[in-house]
Structure formats: structure tokens, C-alpha cells
Length: 340
Image 1 (cartoon, rainbow, N blue to C red):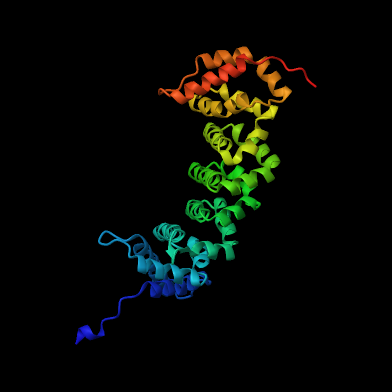
Image 2: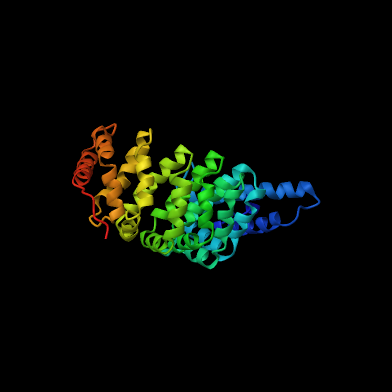
């Protein structure tokens, strides 16, 4: 007889609904009955772990696509994502990690060949403000940062972040004293500036003045070696991308930018020198160099040629050697330009 009264196994939809109810409960002011609250919070953490298990599978089974689709559809049918993100500070560390993985996975889940997370976030774009502000909270920064990077896989979300006031704050977040948070902010910043080519090109063209003024002064001229190294590497990635050719042409026509790159070429760090070279070669290769760029290169011709004579990478690199030979040729051929 016992077997007849066994409870039915919960479906993915049931688990999402119960999780939503528990998140609503968790978001309320603390219950006077502490033991009841603890019990509910433990149940919530268990549910989040179950959601993760459905989406990722476990040691015994792979994820089932039908279950993942049901879970995803129910999750975005109502405001479960917002509830989960706002309640994250109230969860224990393990549940926060599980929740972060659940949110990350849901950004990639397709329902009938459609990324419904993208539509949901477009309609609830202010959720990004919560995630972005997470960099100012030491306990939440890494969880919210990981969620943020998954959400900006969607182009509309990335565009919102790029065009928001938060973008200016990244120049400070990247230099936070907490190394892990600064590195996480740098990873998000890089993703924003490299993933969606057309959106990035549009953003850089529209915001060129303030963006590169901040980039040069706060990152390329930072007193922190890691910040400088990452910044010059990312600058090379941005300027060498074909979709940013108009921005690149503008960047290599500025004497202030050339001065900064020449200082980076003189750094004692080999890796910074090499990354700086990949940007410097764009100044040298520009066939329409403004007169003030030519005059700086001519004035420093012998120093630059001496520097490049001993300039080598640790491993043999034919492309680097070919680029270097071309730069040396360009600089050696330069003559002072008469100013108009």
C-alpha cells in the first residue's frame, strides 16, 4: 500500500515555481520565526542546486534537452531572474555559485531555436544596472561579474552597457585594489570591446574623445604594471580589428597617442614592449602620416632603429620579424616633412 502514496517526482516547471515562491519569501523582511526562515532558505538553496543539475547534468546523467527547455521557458515566463539576482546576497556561498552557473547556462538555452533570455533581458534591461553595480560590492562582484559576461553575449544587452554611464566606471573598477575583482572587471571590459564588432565600432566612433582620453591616462599610463600590460594588449586587439579601421586611422594620427606608445616601447617588461610594438607598427605603416607624427619619428629615428636592432621575441616568430623589418624600413626612409 505504501507505494501508492509516493509523491510524484517534481517537474522542472514545479522546481522553478517553488524556487520563485521561496525567492519572494527570502526577499521579504526577516521572519520572526527564525527556525522557519532557516528551513525555507535551506529549501531554496536545494532547489537552486536542482536547477543547476537539470541544466548541466550530474555524475549519473547528461542534461535532457526537453527538461532544459521546460525549465528555461518557465524561468523567463515571470520575473524569476530578477528575483534570483536581487536575492543573491541573502544566499550562502555555495548557493551563490550555483545560482551564477544557472544564470550563465540560461543565456545559452534555446527554446524552439530562440534565445528567450535575450528577449527577456531586452524587456528588463535595468537588471544590467544591478549586475554592473555589483563591482562596488566585494562579496557580490565575482558572482555578478560572471553573470554579466554571459548576459553581454546578447548584442542588445552589450549595446545597452556600452552606451550606459556604467562604461566610464570600468576605468576605476579595473584599478580596484582587490586583485580578483579588478581582473574580473578587466575581463568584462575586454568582452564588451571585442565581442560584437559592429556595435563596438559604432560605440568607439561616437565616444572616441572621452573613451581614449580615459584609456590613455588611466590604463596605458597607469602606475600598475598589470593594468598597463592588459591595456596595451587590448588596444592592439581593438585597433587591428578590421571593423575598427576608421577608429584606428584616427588613433594613429595623434601625436599624444604616439608619445604614449613610444614610452611603452621603452619599458623594461618584454611583454609590454612586444604588445606596444603591435600598436606602434600601425603608426609607422600609416601612409598618410600627419606632419607632427613624421617630425616625432624623424627626431627619434636613430633611437628607434637602435631599439629595433636588438628587439626579439622569446620564441621564433616569423610574422613578428617580418613586421619589424617593415617598420624599420618605413622609419629609415622618413625625411622631415615641411609643415604646410
